[in-house]
Structures are given as C-alpha cells and as structure tokens.
Image (cartoon, protein in one colour):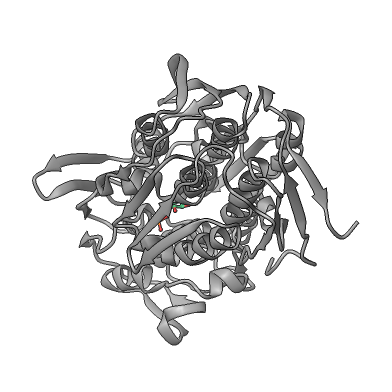
Length: 450
Ligand code: S3P
C-alpha cells in the first residue's frame, strides 16, 4: 500500500506514573526475514510472534506474489510454504512495499539473481530513499536496475540470468545492504563474500545458518567478513520471533522520564548488535535492570525493569555504538531533553536517510517544544532541561515516520503542556498496539479529529 489514509493528529499530555507490564510485539527485522527465508525454503516454515505491522504484512504479500503461500493461523501465528532457492516466479504486478525500507531492500536482493523482471514501489517516504546502495552491489551479480533519478523507486530490476558470485565491502554500515547481498548470493553457484567494517545487526547470518545455509563470519582487522555458499537447499524452520528491542525503547524511555514510573517489559531481544540504547541509558544513569536473562530461539533475552530516573546526565554517545542503536536515536533525543547537561550524537549521518531525515525531524520538533538543539550533517547535540523540564505545547511533524511519531508521543508524556503529532498513522507500520499499550501504562492521549 502507498500511504495509510487520512492523517491522524493526536496529542500526548503529561502522563500519570507509568505502572504495569508492557507486552511488546515481535521484532520487525526478524519478522521480515522469517517470511523471506520461509519463502526461500522448500516446505512449511511455522512462525509464532510475527509482528503484524503494515511493513511486515507488505513483505508477506510480496512473498505471495513471488509464489510462496503465506497463511495466517491466529494472532502472530503464520506459516509460509516456500518455493526454494531459485523457485521464485515473476510477479504479475508491481511489488509495493509501502513504508518498508527493510522489506523492499531485502526482497530486491532475494530476487536479483533470479531470471525475471520485477518493479518495486512504496509510499512517499520509501520513494524518497536511496536505493543505489542496493542496486550497486546487485549490478555486480549481473542484475540491471532502472529507477528514477538518484536510483529512487519506482525501480525495475532485471534479474541476472547467469549470475556470478560477488565479493563486496559495504560502503555504509547497513544490515539491509549486507542482507540484500547475502540473499542475492543464495541464488548463485559459488561463494559470495560480504565485508562490513562496522558490525550491524546479524539476524540474517543467524537465520541463514538456522535454515541450513553454509555461512561463516570471520572477525578480522578489516571488520567482519561473511562467507556464504550459494545455491543451498534451505530447510523450513519453526521460528519464535523475539520481541523487538526497538519497540521496547518507547515504553522504556517513557518510564525513565515520567515521574513515579515503575514498569516491566518482558522478554526483550538483547542481541548485542541491537542493544546499544539500553547500555547508553545506563551510562546516563537510568534505573534499568535486566531480570531473568536467558536465551530464546538463539537470541539473548531478558525482562527489562525500568523505574523513573530523575537524575540522568547528558553524555557523548560513543559513535562506535551507532549501528547497534541506529533506530533508537529519536527516542533517546527525548530522554536527553529530560536529562541534565548536553547529550552528543556523533557519526549519525545514516539518520538522514531513514523513513525521514530523523536529525531534522527531531531537531525541529524538539525546538518547537522549547529544547535547544545543535545539529550538522552527521551530529546532533541536545541541551537537556532536566527531569520534566520540556515545555511542549507544539505539534511535531512526523513525515510518514513511525519512530518520529512515537518519540513525540513519549515527549508529551513528560512535558508541561503536552505535545501533538500531525499524524500518528505511521505507527501502524511497526507497533500496531502502541497507543493502547501506552494508555494502559498511564499515557494520556487524545485523538484530535474526533
Ligand atoms: C534493518 C536495518 C537498519 C534499520 C532498519 C532495520 C534491518 O537499516 O534502521 O530499521 O532489519 O536490516 P540500515 O540497514 O539502513 O541501517
């Protein structure tokens, strides 16, 4: 789908102390990969805990267009009857990935080494995002791409009829780029090698191994070097999707800044390539503890216990941590506004090419709420006003970006005069139960158009 209907303006007023248990939906990254790898296996993959956000549903529909059977059996319970590596059929229509950068980029990779022509599109946000970072390495396999100026969607890829294996170093730290190359490598006889200088989320590698691919990661002085043998027979899996740390970030950060809060966020995935936010919050002085740490489905998990932390201090976030918390900077900037002193984000230019330009969206919205911000191409500094010190009283523009919408809803919860968002609709892409979940904890939200 392209767009989500009429805008849904909403206001978040100062919340009552947050109390209770926050049940977070399934991990978005792992949900996309479960459907795509399920479609590339021969036989039935069974999935529980699948995120039923619009992004993932769009990926499910795309897998059906390529010939897999994707069936819902109950809430979060799905099966995929896969067609096997090399078994994709040419879709009869354009593949519309809606708002999902992960969806479209991974699918482009998976289809690029199949002898077929596929056209991709998405909503206004996705159509503005760079795709050259994907089509450049796919060209090395022999796939040709024809997009709009700047390689933007809509974009047609003529898959390689006779693909060759590739050795590729990702030019930006991006799990989507790494994963697209690995998925393309599945369709090629021989070894595909991807090197990444900075570690990004490694769900693709873990899951490919789980599905039976021959894949190995060497940690070298040049970074992580991943070797994948092409044309494996992927075996269907039973997958329990862990809960999404990037979604957990919203109630966690809200509880830290709303006075009197004490919540439990059970069973959160703490893969080290994803957990940078929680370390950073603890460095700032957050009262955030891991209870019942364990391993589930090959991923480390724990229950997060979070209490209001009125004396958090601004810090410089280590740039080396950026990839492990790249989606969490928007909500961290809200915590930083409620901390004492300045918080510095460096090495974060990737934030400018997410669902929106997230540095610009957070800077403009926080400024309108009375927070002083400095920013440049790849940095942002938030001058904190201390606990409960953000005046608010503004309406933030969300630019079709779910995480910007949720971040400003969180900002409103600890603000003096409340914070509005021009459109809460995009929240459905990744966290469909965000509003009722936050309201049950103590959030005070009003829907502004009745
Ligand atoms: C994702 C990778 C990240 C992240 C996105 C999900 C993934 O994007 O921002 O939300 O599932 O691979 P980049 O690869 O652009 O960093």
